Amino acid sequence: MDWNQKIQRYLLGEASEQETAELTHELEENADLRQTFIFASHVDAALRERSLQETLSEVARDDKRELPSQSAKRPSWFFISASAALAATVFVAIGIWINRPETIATIASSENAAWESALPTNVGAGLTAGQLELKRGMSTIKFRSGAEMLVEAPASLRLLSPMRVKLLSGTAVVNVPDSAKGFVLETPNGYAIDYGTRFSVEIDDRGDAADFALIEGKIEVHHAKSGESRMLADSGVSAVVSAKSITVETGDLEEQVKMFPLTLDDDTFRISSNGRCRSVVKFEKFQDRKIFDDFLYVKSGNNPNWDYKSFFQFDVSEVDRDRLTDARLRLNLVPSPFGVASLLPRVNRFAVYGITDTDARQWRDGALWSDAPTPAEGVLLGQFEILRSQERGSFGISNKRLLSFIKEYGDAPVMLLVMRETGKTDGVGKVLVHAFASDTHPESVGPQLELSTN
Image (cartoon, rainbow, N blue to C red; front, side, top):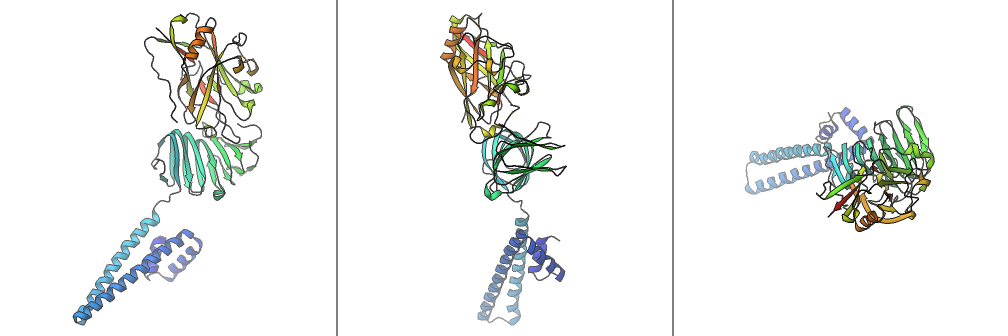
């Protein structure tokens, strides 16, 4: 027998002494049940009052009609039966109301978000406990406690309560106000208790290690298997929780935008960089550890030691440049292996420079940051923008400045430099490093010049 049935039996006077004692004890311990009992009691009292009023009204009407005493009793039995039926109906409704799933959060915002879920996923929708799969874009979930979670695709999460969520895969930034102190974010091998703060968390591709990075405030990170915990109280500190251990790292952490069409006109041809494309990180000690050949990285952040830039060359020596009528640089955006997009502005701006300095235009295999071209050694050719929620697409510039640059400097291979101009919105943390495909990327095409002739 569930508590709803016990409440019904108590109000109908059918509960035994043991049932009454059990109900009394549970009401002392369970705040939600107390609210249910109060609601049910009010309904019961209203029904009893209505039944009494109806019965008295019928008796008064019967007295005026001077009906026999036996006939006068029938209406009272009728209304008692009707009231009992109504009471039963209301208690059924109460049972449905009691058992209705609790709304624990809402979808507060959506940025190009695509979901796979049995739960409603439109902006403003109430969410009950259950699993959500974010396949594309970004979305903010606001919990009833006041905690907010900005989730980046691809991600899988399980809503547990207004004060608890489990991130199974993906990346998120969590903001916890005072009203939600004690909010818990679980991961496959541990969890973090938030004490009013802002932090990010990334689950690796294997779904094993979770990287918690403190942006501001204080969190306590726990390792489920060993029971060990670490308190993070300094901005920029991170803790990695894997199946085997928990480790703390101290140091530097880090609307509609038009994309290029994929098709070409009949009078347009493409030139690739043919392997002459490279990325460099300012912290040269980490060049080999932080640069993967399949990607061209760009980033600017609060700590310039972890800035990235990319450059590439195109040989246009065999092109009849006098016949060129249009020029376009195409870069293919691909998912980045580094950083959190939520820490960026909604729209991010990139700049493309044409290198004019004779010495800087020389290609150097294995170049480091100090060897790479700089904006001061060239001219600004154009800018383009990318939404932080986008992971793929073709971007670049197409204008008269690029065309003029190719015509003027095309006697030798032309060198272009791309840099990100926008940094983080605030605080510290592992901000996203944007990644474009290099010539060796397994799925996407590297940098290309698209030239049109008359």
